[in-house]
Length: 274
Ligand SMILES: Nc1ncnc2c1ncn2[C@@H]1O[C@H](COP(=O)(O)OP(=O)(O)O)[C@@H](O)[C@H]1O
Ligand SMILES: [Mg+2]
Image (cartoon, rainbow, N blue to C red):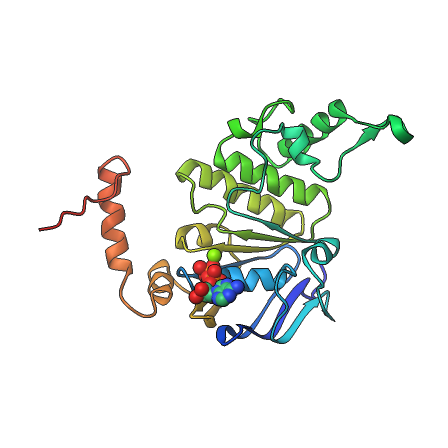
């Protein structure tokens, strides 16, 4: 695979009026690679990916696609260049079918001229085939309403859709944040699948274990700056957790909460106030 990064940020700053949100951000992702962007709430993760996705223009610095500096004029422009963003709930329409959601905005039609109609059969067949290819074998009926799918399945549907329509960069903003363990595992499997197909994946999360399961490369964002940047295997889970908390020893606390949850059916400790 090509060694030129598919997407890159070079010394990017982003301010909103007087508020500086991103400082000197440089990062790159190659085809078939997963970059995990870690950081606490408010660190600037969403602002960073909106800059990659053409929603925000950088105040300073550059966005490069295939090694060339580009000015993204908006999200549509980014999409045309193969940069796809999937948001937390998959951006799907619950009251519409799997087939409809899969082809939203790209509907296959049959007939011609004023007689063109949405080809439901074809849409359903392709949608089911494609989600199955990504390993989501539980979706077998394209007429099923998306509202009846689990959170993980919805995410997976949105990812399969982006892959099918030719995305080369897949940006996932906290895809596993609202999911249970099984559902999150499901989404992580799809991320691996997208990587195998040669997509450049940017995976945003504050769950260190999720990042470690799929990441090749990690960047920790603290108050809008990259505080650490390392490759798989270079840092332990404890080190990453502590880095995200800005150097406080959080790993010990996290381990004890998880230990509690394991022996209490997944429930977090009760907080009692005096
Ligand atoms: N459009 C905006 N105008 C002003 N401030 C913003 C805007 N968008 C984000 N911010 C600020 O930037 C900081 C980072 O936000 P965000 O990128 O959403 O962080 P994260 O996704 O890591 O939680 C926050 O302090 C937020 O208030
Ligand atoms: Mg965010």
